[in-house]
Length: 167
Image (tube, rainbow, N blue to C red; front, side, top):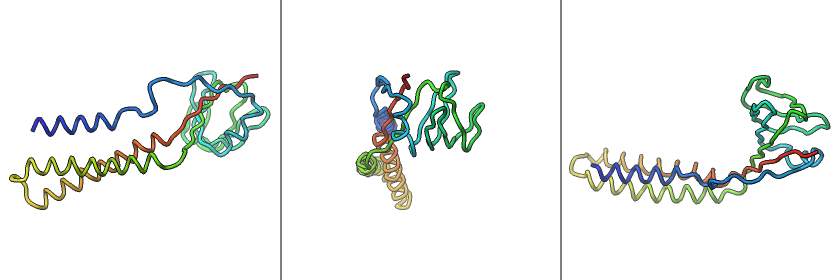
């Protein structure tokens, strides 16, 4: 019993480790006029001078403000279309997804790991369960491995670029 819990805990811990590294990259320094082609149509998190973080899709970058389709309401910026003044923006985090290899690989590894773990768990308790319970446990563990692998792979595919606006 303790061995099953140890194996499950180790697998969960392994899959939950951060995949982007522990250090944070130095922000990319760009002028305001260079932002429009890079940001428009992408998910961004804008950090304001008062520490507020506004998340949403960048619609346009104007001379005096950034137009944002705010995805989650924060103080002063309700959900929906909003304008953030240029002088209040401190940092911009641009989120992009590159390819799908991480999701594909994560799902495959999750399925294979789920099959192995499901077979191990079922083999250890085969005398105490019916055939239906064994199949349910096996399928459940395999599906959980696939879903976990997909989300870990999605984290690998996601790229965040930190941008600091310079005069």
